Amino acid sequence: MTVSPDLGTPAATSSGIVPTSIPAPAPVPLPAPPAVTAPFDSTAFRAVFRRHAAGVAVITAAGARPAGFTATSLTSVSADPPLLSFGISSTGSAWPTIADAAHVGVHILGEHQEDVAATFARSGADRFAPPTAWGPGPYGVPLLEDVHVWLVARVLARIPAGDHRIVVAQAVAGAPGGDADRPLLYHHGRYNALRH
Image (tube, rainbow, N blue to C red; front, side):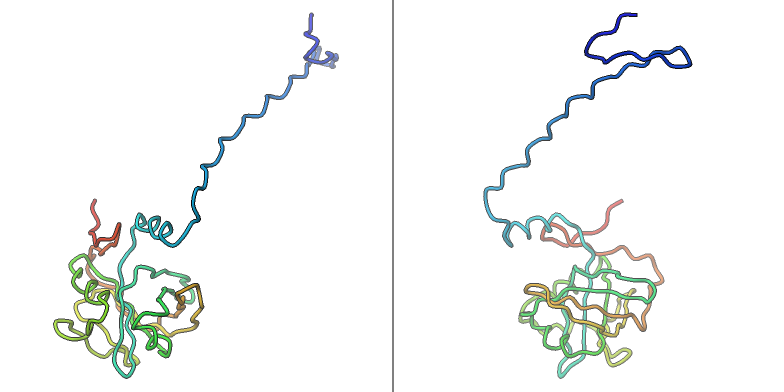
């Protein structure tokens, strides 16, 4: 048997097979990461999340006057205990009421409720004036009518996070929804419906 000098020296084994060493393959160079030409600022960050489709909810709280806002940051945190979280701007008109509230209402909107989402997202609007239909729910929390899925949650924490606060709350009451409502989505700066 002739062995190439770059394969090492053959050695006999009890099986009669002569193993040889094989050189390791040369490492494959990884592609260079794209060049960073500008700082990653809030404009770039918003552009990224415009491409992230999110469900739409309205968060409400009781105070001297009821307060509420449209949120796309609602997240399930834990099933046991049932915890949720949402983000709220610390400069938003609803923040002073949410900051003091012991309980909040969480309303997950269906695709037919784009007008409700727009009302609670509008700056300076009286969000609870007609045509908004609502009434007091458990713990005095303002609950919107014609919402198939709602929760009342006890606030556990308000965590500073940049120009927002992350509110963590535990669900204590609610209606999980009877009909399979198609959700309202927010994507690329517009309200959308789920398509199959």
